[in-house]
Image (spheres, rainbow, N blue to C red):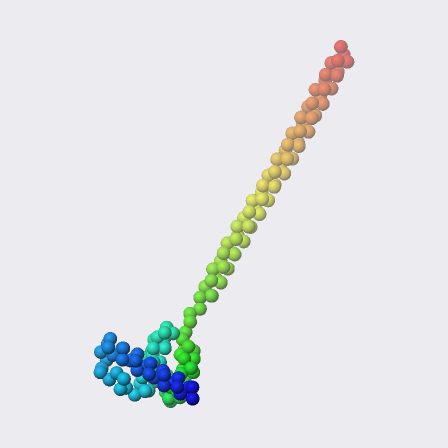
Length: 156
């Protein structure tokens, strides 16, 4: 019972909508005298436009074919079929590719830094060794001068 009322209510709304379209586009002077099936097709087109899916009445007849009369008595299932026919674009794949590229760049930078650190460490070690050698040389020089001074004091 409630499905029949709902379908009749939708047909009335479709007639009103079609009447408004006739006023705007001057499609003809038929208005409210149209058959309920044609009014329902207009309503289906209105529902489809709300769901960002633009289709004409002829297009609906081609797609639904024999099931049109069954759908006209059950508008809920008709709305489901319209939603199922809508397509959505996927953008997730592009985002994943961008993230992978960023990770690769970071790895390259880290490798370069490690090489520089090794070179610096080698240089530092060489410098330390040189300094140590210089210190030992200076120490030996100092010892010889001290010994020479002792000899001088002993001789005098």
